[in-house]
Image (cartoon, rainbow, N blue to C red; front, side, top):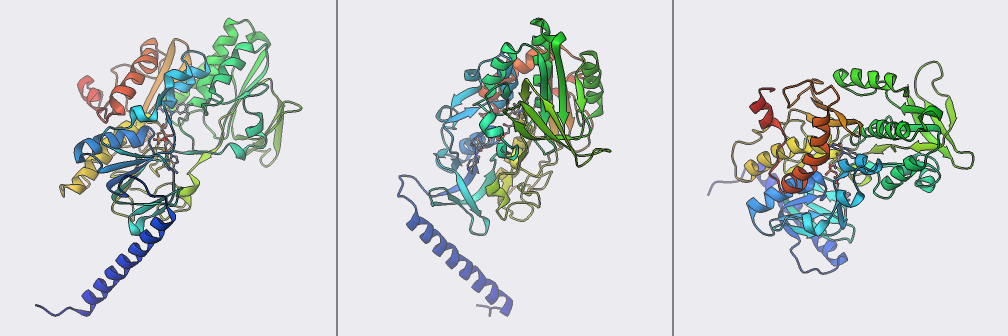
Length: 450
Ligand SMILES: Cc1cc2nc3c(=O)[nH]c(=O)nc-3n(C[C@H](O)[C@H](O)[C@H](O)COP(=O)(O)OP(=O)(O)OC[C@H]3O[C@@H](n4cnc5c(N)ncnc54)[C@H](O)[C@@H]3O)c2cc1C
C-alpha cells in the first residue's frame, strides 16, 4: 500500500470532516421535522412544480424510475399563466388556465407538498418550511419569479377594488375583465415596471384588448388611454417594437417612458409615478385614474436571494449555455428564477428544459458532459386584438428574431392569434408538462426558417 501524501491526508480529513458535519446537520434537521412516510433522499430534487419544474421532472422521473425524483411544490393548483391575458379580457375563463397539481404531477415523481425554505448546496440538501432536510445527488431549481405586490404603496389593499386590477394574479385577473366591461370612460392607465418581469409583453397586451372592447362599447371617444413603462422602449426587439409603436399611434394610445408606478391613492383615485429619466428625473407625476391595470415589480425569490446559489442580483447563478450552476456542479436551474439573460417566458422554458434534461442525464450517465447548449430562444405572442397577434420570437442573447413560420411575424395575423389562443395551450397540457415538447426548433428546420 502506498504511503499517503500530506495533501491526500488533508483532503481525506476534510472529506471526513465535511461528511461528519453533513451527518450532524441531517440528524439535527430530522429531529426538528415531522416523521413522514416517504424517503428524504432522492437522485434529483426539483424545486417548484410550475411550467419549468414539471417540464423537467416528467422526463427525469420517467427515465430514472419511481421515487428517484422529488418535486417540492406547495401549491394545490397549477396555472398556465399565459392564458391570463385572455382571461383578463373575457376571451377564456380562469378555469381553463388551471389544473389540480395532483393531476399534472408526473406519476413517477414524489410530490413533496411543502416549500423550500433554504438551500445547503455544500451538504447537497434543501430544508423545507417544516424543518425537514431533503438530500439529493442533483438539484434543479425552478421556483419562478417573486411578484412584489407590496412595493407599490397601497396596491395590496386596493387590488380588485374600484377599477384597480392586475392580470398577474389568479385572484385579480377576472376583475380585469369585470372592470373593462363596466368601464364608462375616463382615464385608463396601464403600467409596466422597470424591474425584470415574466412575459414583458403582457402589460401592453391587455391595453390593446381593453381599447378594442371600449371602441366596440362606444366609450372610446370619452377615454384617455396611457401606458406607463419604467423602461425606455416599448419592446426590447426593434422589429416588433416598430410595429407596436405604429399600432399605438393609430389607436391613440399614449406611451410614457421611464415612469415607474410607486403609489396608489384609493381615496382620490390617483396613481403616483416616479420619473426615472429626463429633465423631470427624481420628481413624481400624479394622475387620476378610472381604470388602472398594474404590472407589479418583480424580482428573485427571497429564499434564493439569501442562498449560496444566488448571483449578485439574487437569481440562481447558472451558465447561460449549459444551465449548470457556476459554482455547484450538481445544481441546475431554468425558467423565471434563473440568471439566464433572456426574457422570462414559458416559451423560453421549452428550449431551456430540453437543454437541461440532456445535460443532467449525460451527467448522471457519465456521457458527453455539457454537450447541449441553450441559445437564448424566447417568444412573446403580442395579442393586439381579439383576432390578431404579432408573434415575437427571438434570441435574448443576440437580440435577433428567431421566427418559426415562413412569413413576417411582426405583422398582425389571425393565424398566429389562433395558434396562441387554441393550439399552444393544448401543447402545454398534453406535451410540455409531459416533457415531450422541446419548442419549435424542429419546425424552424422544417420550414427552412432557421
Ligand atoms: C399575465 C401573464 C401572461 C403571460 N403570458 C405569457 C405568454 O404569452 N407566453 C409565455 O411563454 N409566457 C407567458 N407568461 C410567463 C410564464 O407564465 C412564465 O414565464 C412561466 O410560468 C415561468 O415558469 P416557472 O416554472 O419558471 O415559474 P412558475 O410557472 O411561476 O412556477 C414556479 C413554481 O414554483 C413554486 N415555488 C415558489 N416558491 C417555492 C418554494 N419556496 N419552494 C418550492 N416551490 C416554490 C410555485 O408555487 C410555482 O408553482 C405570462 C405570465 C403572466 C403572469
